[in-house]
Picture 1 (cartoon, rainbow, N blue to C red):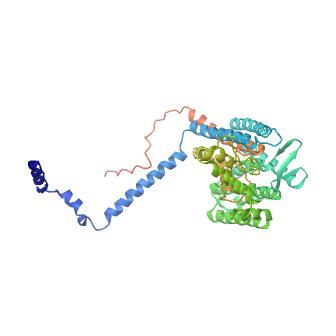
Picture 2: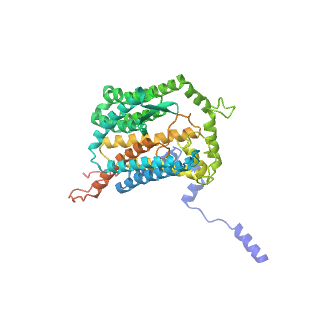
Length: 452
């Protein structure tokens, strides 16, 4: 024991080995260059790593195999529609009339019509899309005039936006969204670089086209649909290349117009007061629907109470199968179910963006951006509305909320995107003839200095 301790004591007291020059520089930082070059080099390296990460993420969004992009868009659409049918059945299974399958049967019938239309649209010649946009624009304008100025218009939810012809009842404004996307993309793509000038993007796209549709929709009192149409118009103008000063001015004017319409309408201001927490001392309208929607989301937890086991759907939440169906998803399927729905919407917009990024046709890019702004923007408004981030404006959740015309037109819009994705698949599958040419130089590689 004594020998061992003495040996260890001698070891600890033994002199250190001499350091080399690199060790001296590491130990004495004062000997480093004082001109700041080391700090600048570190910052440049960190910025380069950050730029590389951003480039990798961007490549993920704009890249992808044409075959993969097609199935991403189709798979997300079918999954969302299937979830929608399931939740409509669950939320309407407590029907007081004793017919729990009536509502979901009607929704399933519209879903079949929409899926057939989606498949037909996905295989028709792409050059027909421009004519389809003109036809949808004209037809929707005629039906919107019938809704606003004839007895055929049917009221519901504080606005007159339904067209009732015999046993068929639908919303022409949903067809107007599709028509505005296709027709607007055709007009702006034909303008080309002239869109940068005020007169060329204003006429005929904004006036009289888009403003006519907006006026007809607002004539029926449907502010929620008008907001979605403004999103579509803004997305198309932004991608078309409208000058930023014009774009910001138009955006400010649209926000001011929406605020004014809410201010002059009493029932809309009641919804704003409810959103701000005013007039909520008693559990009555207008806070009743929002508060019980939050109760449903809170009671679901992570896993949910179980499919079909919702308690708030027993007449506690008005229109639970329409605008507030997301609350039933949160209650029955929990946080996991809501994240699944959100993930499907995110994956859907990624697939649509990839289709746009892989196309050189400006019309295709505009249509894809317009469809993405329509579907994902409307989904964002609905989810923000039911979670209390925005006032209640009466916007359904695409593919999921009850509404046959909304589901059918959304599926037709996806069919247009699938048409572009299918064409990209066909072009990618064509064999290419090898050509003898100089190897293509990377754009990131530095140029070699020519020798003297």
